Image (cartoon, rainbow, N blue to C red; front, side, top):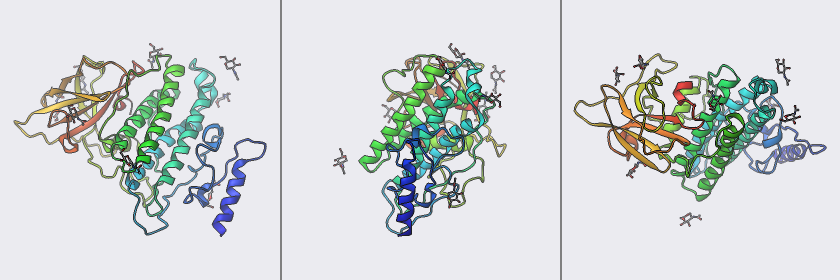
Length: 367
Ligand SMILES: *[C@@H]1O[C@H](CO)[C@@H](O)[C@H](O)[C@H]1NC(C)=O
Ligand SMILES: *[C@@H]1O[C@H](CO)[C@@H](O)[C@H](O)[C@H]1NC(C)=O
Ligand SMILES: *[C@@H]1O[C@H](CO)[C@@H](O)[C@H](O)[C@H]1NC(C)=O
Ligand SMILES: *[C@@H]1O[C@H](CO)[C@@H](O)[C@H](O)[C@H]1NC(C)=O
Ligand SMILES: *[C@@H]1O[C@H](CO)[C@@H](O)[C@H](O)[C@H]1NC(C)=O
Ligand SMILES: *[C@@H]1O[C@H](CO)[C@@H](O)[C@H](O)[C@H]1NC(C)=O
Ligand SMILES: *[C@@H]1O[C@H](CO)[C@@H](O)[C@H](O)[C@H]1NC(C)=O
Ligand SMILES: *[C@@H]1O[C@H](CO)[C@@H](O)[C@H](O)[C@H]1NC(C)=O
């Protein structure tokens, strides 16, 4: 009774006075998908120009299960996705809090740039709400951690924005392959489309480049490996709500890859020397347990295909397949089997080689 009164109050406040989006606090009704502003219905998820954290990102804790019934069939998928979304949302929120219009016009960029960053932040807040609502009441809804994205200025922020968006698109294609419910696949495609619009905007307005990424963006099969890049790269250890499940769940904790950019362009046809990335917080550099006498391969994924190239574990060198077009992203892993046909065949990576903007860099080059 009390909760439905609260919900009515929140709903009526959300409509606002004079039609302007008005923030309300959904924390009191977050467990009810009908309560509070709804993505796709409320302008808050596109037009909120406030600098402080919009709902439902004002939450700091995990939301505990409210029933003991059986978990939803895609609950773990959406828990992983919600944890990823807290990372993506936090990236934009930090930008909104740090910059203003001049930060970007000073770089010669359009005077709408700051507003677009704010709008994307609002869209990402809507994704938080959608993923929270997609987790059944029998499962926990993970809360936000603290994140360090390591950009130093507005230009660094905009460079990393490409990586954040193409990574989001890649894990949406991968999570879609794990989904049990058909509606989950539809949700993931719709969210990936929104991230693709964000990236399209950046290519046109920020980078002044061709906005199209060729016939098809890259589909990758192993979502949690991409999610682990965000976790290992950006999440401050020990900063997550203690109730949160491990992220990603399950996790392989594979050695992370970078490449030597003084000997490779990162584009098709170029030689590439992989570098194992030092862990930011443990000062260790995880490397694969290579078995003497076994063959290893660099497997490059692009579009809906992959190409396998021999990999020399002594020189750590390979060649980026010349057959690929230099569009969107190329994703590289080290595997013990050509084609990396199973999760366990992969021993390091993935490394995201950003093709557009064409002078972009790898995720590890920035992060
Ligand atoms: C939202 O409500 C919760 C619980 O009443 C409160 O702790 C929190 O400070 C509120 N947040 C905002 C932004 O008003
Ligand atoms: C942005 O912030 C800077 C530094 O505080 C300030 O000088 C500038 O006037 C601000 N620009 C806008 C458009 O608010
Ligand atoms: C933004 O730029 C456009 C043209 O690029 C100009 O017409 C408009 O007046 C500018 N708006 C502001 C608020 O400076
Ligand atoms: C989901 O898709 C499959 C394959 O197209 C179909 O057989 C099944 O009926 C769909 N399920 C529902 C609940 O619509
Ligand atoms: C990258 O390659 C250059 C040229 O061979 C070499 O001098 C440098 O040490 C390499 N960097 C790393 C981190 O291996
Ligand atoms: C290649 O990687 C191995 C770890 O597997 C490392 O010990 C070695 O120094 C690397 N070699 C080069 C040339 O970078
Ligand atoms: C890579 O391509 C091969 C050959 O088409 C295929 O058998 C394999 O499953 C692909 N790998 C992945 C991870 O999709
Ligand atoms: C990237 O290339 C574009 C077009 O060549 C150029 O306008 C832009 O300044 C470059 N950006 C960086 C960060 O080098």
